[in-house]
Amino acid sequence: MQLTINGTSKDYPDSISVQQLLVQLDLAPELVVVELNRDILTPNMHADTILKTEDKIELVQFVGGG
Image (cartoon, rainbow, N blue to C red):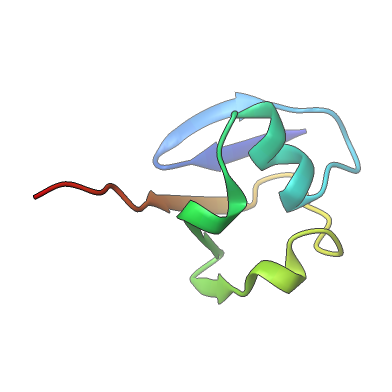
């Protein structure tokens, strides 16, 4: 299935959850905000939200610094 993540299209296996996607992308769920088709997902939704072809995902990572 094809997903668009931060403006870039890429193929992923069918029936992948948001949580599985974050693991594949090596992103820590507690440091990422996930927007799926213009809706913000809370972290407790990641495991139960199964992605569908042509979903649009925006990932925003928190970065520390000073």
